[in-house]
Image 1 (cartoon, rainbow, N blue to C red):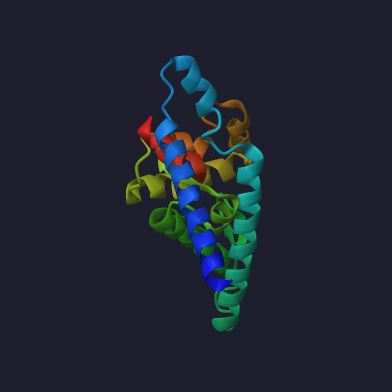
Image 2 (cartoon, rainbow, N blue to C red; image 1 turned 60 degrees about the vertical axis):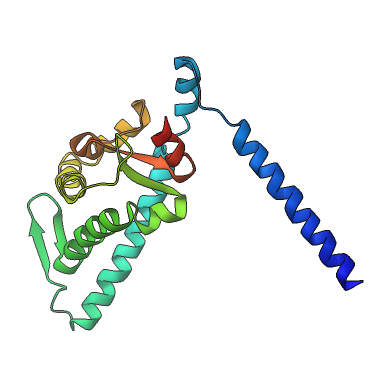
Length: 185
């Protein structure tokens, strides 16, 4: 009975593999501008997806900064009045910018973005350079915070769902599933 079951599993695996290969061969890129426009609406991460990813990131940042305060015996828990950020602890500011810059540079996504299956790319679909990341995460975020987070609403109203920080660094936030297809097109 065991050899028969193994043969059935091997046959089922081969059939599945052949079906996947057929689907891959039948797939074609859009040939008209209209087809591209319809398909491209699915490439970019929308406001609510990005918002949930941001909330997850804020939870991670607060947890790490609390842990940092514990290990530093409260030395980094100094409440400082930053010109743009307002009154925040030094550990929070350090962790926030280090987290966003490091995660975006090395992985093209933060933990929140990983969970939501979205990532940051340049408009051309390339990996971000360090300059792109610094512009996006430091300059863009500070400017957005200074403008009371209102530039995040631009994500709702722009074609590529870009916020002010995306315009500054010439980046987009794309769904992971469509990233490869977007580069091919």
